[in-house]
Image (tube, rainbow, N blue to C red; front, side):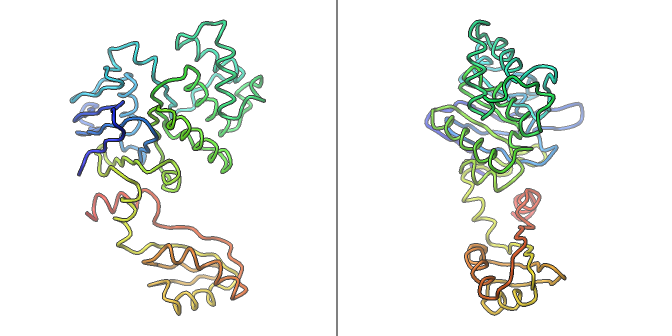
Length: 314
């Protein structure tokens, strides 16, 4: 497997890094380098993503191997830690503080003068669409709003490297799109943005550069489209909800769009080797049959399926 290298000048370099907690191996011989732009890190719970992020931010040392961020060791170089922004997966906010107060404190901890912290916080909250609620206490915020406060706190000192651990969790679809657009703007400005996610659809929107970890190991890296093409040699399973699933299923078989199916009272589960063709034609077929579609859900596009393919299938 080739090691992913993104950009002309690597901003993060991980070289044969492992992390042990007693007899537990959290990260095992991981190597990659990335530069400016957005890179997605995929992995299930327990895959080692958060441990890797903590090492990149200097919060814990590697047990073996070396890592460099902006040509420095984040564990020993205080200056480089000031050029990093971290959004932790944990929901660790001070509920009695307003959003502006919380982000202002984050600004001061990163060395921004107290006289400038408030304006920096206003700018950061504006980036995440929270400028109009900065005076409200975060204890009253929804999960999605709390996530955005964490992103604002990571952005407030304008870091060169952003490490974001599941930052899209809890966001509604509109805010998810806006947040992804923000990540792209930051990446286009030359920052290195490393985002973890467990949702393949999100990864497709985040960008083409992907690192996939499973059981502490890097099992795939490179272009997301190449990864999907590798997986396209096996059937995709999709659940299609419809008012008349039997009529719909019959037409899908007649037109050669599915290779197998099973019927239920209100939906049909189909296997297809050409998911793009099915996606293009399903709505047209439903209109022709005067069948109302109620659901189209991929059943094998989760990360567990990806990992089964990468770890077992290859």
